[in-house]
Amino acid sequence: MRVFKQFKELKMDVLKEVGNIGAGNAATALSHLLNKPIDMAVPKVQILRFEEVSDKVGGSEQVVVAIFLRVEGDAPGNLFFILSPKSAKSLLKRLAGIKVANDDSFNDMEMSALNEIGNILSGSYLSALADLTKLSMSPTVPSLAIDMAGAILSYGLLQYGEMGDDALLIDTTFLEGNHEVEGQFFLIPDPESFAIIFESLGVPTEND
Amino acid sequence: MIEQNVVKVAMADLNVIKQYGLIRTSGLGSCIGLTMYDPILHLAGMAHVMLPSSEIAREGELNIAKYADTALPALLERLQKMGSSKSNLVAKMAGGSQMFAFGGQNDTMRIGPRNTESCRAKLQELGIPLIGEDTGGNYGRTIELDCSTGILFIRSVQMGVKEL
Figure 1: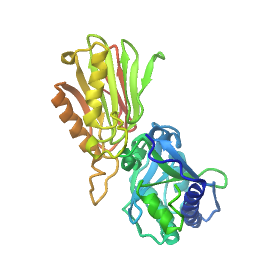
Figure 2: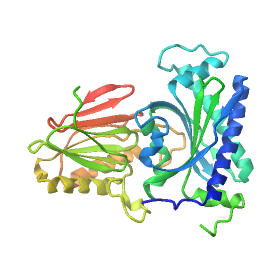
Figure 3: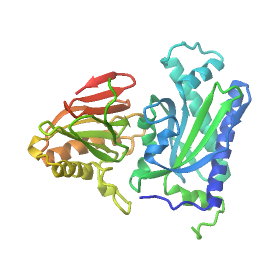
Figure 4: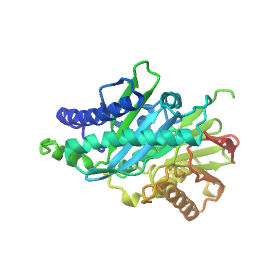
């Protein structure tokens, strides 16, 4: 069963803009951290079957580095910042002061640095969103996991599980000039949050 | 390994396989991969359970494969329809981990352990013995049941492959 009737084009555009502003602010923060220009792709807003969500990052068994935080407040939801392990290593190497081992595993120092980067970026994403909507959005302490994408992303779908078998995802990719650092933001607002977000932005809700 | 018949079970789905081949589900986090196996008919069923109870469901048309309390009886029924008898069935399960640890524990974050408990309780109620279990921890799993032997292979990023 579908949770959503497909939103009208205007609403999809509004959600794209939400992703654009959030991720744009985060990209600026990352650009300051790395002292390098960061490019951003046009956000995608999609309604996906649960199984398709992890296909967005290479399938449910693909190992990814993910920083996850729950958004609390007026419009609750889940926010993921996702990197491939290779991108995560490149990102760490570009930050001063961390000695990065060249193997596939991540040591405590690297994990902690990644968690902090995720924290900064997600914080900028959310604060831009809160400014835009004038809604209160407070992030929980972020949590880092390096594991199968399916296992990680399923946490963003639980709120949808009670209602149906698909979820709405606002997906924004950004990359550093030569593609060595590439990351994705997934914002998955709780199903109840959409009406609140639309209302806060003055989008008429009556003609769904 | 030689390429063979593989049945894939998606998230919040269930399926069965007969005589030979593998039935698998990937990327289990807080979800449970539950298998029922009939060693006499070489019949195997698997459910990828996402939530502990259908009581919280607000969906119009219930997806019975998604909830522990509805998926397990549905799986049993599928196997019985294929000729299996309940007294021959044995169950194994894996998953139910807690991938993220948050300070302020709310119920959503404890979903893995709750799924595990709910599956155990339902199996007991159905009278199907649970002969193997690999649940909990903070890591993801992919599982595969070999229909000819009933062996459950559990793969994770950190722990490698485990057999049940």
